[in-house]
Image (cartoon, rainbow over all chains, first blue to last red; front, side, top):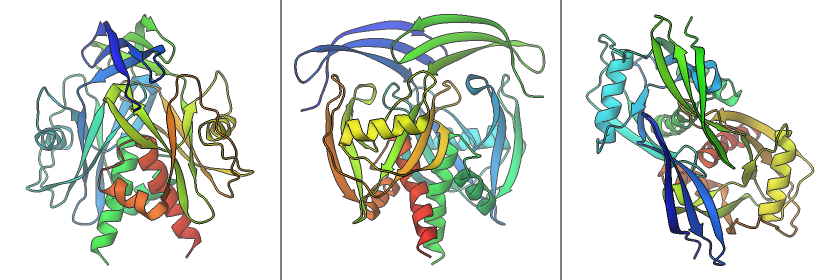
Length: 180
Length: 180
């Protein structure tokens, strides 16, 4: 029995993206401890692969790490939203591409020690090009990169975003398995 | 030029694990926007592989997601700490295992949209068993799992922690490459 019973829960801040609360918990030995918890609505992301084996990526400035990152298209879930619908919308908004068929790869917790954020990742093939319409405060550049080059750059530690690393590494196994 | 200039930075909460601040930024079109940022000291993690191809994992209750997760050993960086020293310490404290040689796999941002947390992942082989000494408020169970079984469970979405998924997927490519 490793569960931690909540004795008290204090909301510290409710923002647009995150909510911070501090829970007082009872540990298995009955001692008390505090847990700082960042609530997030979760997100959906897409590994979009073109017919000629390129991945569509977005280049985006990320204020928390003060740098421009290359990432697979993704966005936050709206309340009670089906992650697949979110994935489809974000792919279209950020890159203009759409697809008939999305295939779930996996979902994961970004940092379960302090946050409940979960990201659902999908694979998209047979893409159709269209016109992107990013959100008002989103400045994006859409980039294409050959799948194998992206994989190499992840293994070299040059692509540092978790959903992009997990999505591409996992998609690589799936595509490899099918080509056997 | 995608950079966002900080106009104002307001500290909301300074905790033991995270600090929350809200920055007011100037976007490329000169409009203003807010960025909620969760500061974290960063962490180091280890993929520990035994001579007979098993991975040493820790089973741990994670309050933010209210569930027990299987994870590779990891811990938070102390101020200005070398991530490799942190990785070595956490491996020993959580599992009792030590090793002469740690090899850097990669580092990544868990959730760069709202947090600066970075995790450095190492590969450890030639492990020597010893006695674990977890922190006072850490309740851990140490588990061994064959590498291939763990990889299968990640691909099925059953292992949901980001550092564990990235660490094992990337280590698999490194080990596969060497066995060619």
